[in-house]
Amino acid sequence: MNFSKLKESRLRKKFEKTLETLPEITSISDKDIKTIGILTIDEISSTIDLQKEVEAIFGIRHSKIYSFKKFDKNDQISYKHFSEKDFNWGGSIIQPNIKVFLEQPFDLLIGFFENNNLYLEKAVLESKASLKVGISGVNAKLYSLEIAVKSSQISSFLKELRRYLNILKKSKN
Image (cartoon, rainbow, N blue to C red):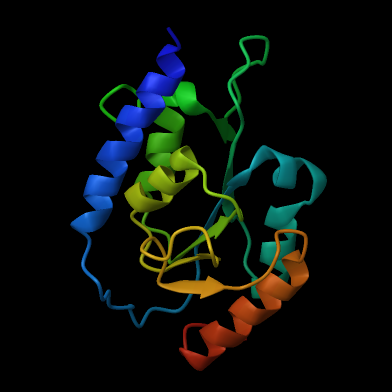
């Protein structure tokens, strides 16, 4: 029996149930963007210095990034990655580092992944960020703003995001 598939199925049902209870309309705070968190997949964060790109476009320092990486028992524990093993059968996050990341009240959370990923979507849902932005086509209920680009178009994504934030008067630059 494949317990990981059973666990994922159970988590998916619980995630969908939680999504149904979310309000249709969310309000956006008036605060300027000063703190940014990024959630992505390891394939992107290992090829592109996403954190550096975000900091350059928005003129901030010390943004934080966490990447989802498939569990491999041969990998060392990393404080920049999380995996499916960091979630228990009830859907709660058990790894303290990702928990701390998600509890930070970022002014902006960027969900930079273009394919559905239960664990990344769950992390975006659990985040205490005041504004959540992501690539369109993943899960519209998770984000306040979606931008239609491919994950290979990081600079286009960030330029569009900056433009929208200027329109919303959330960025002074």
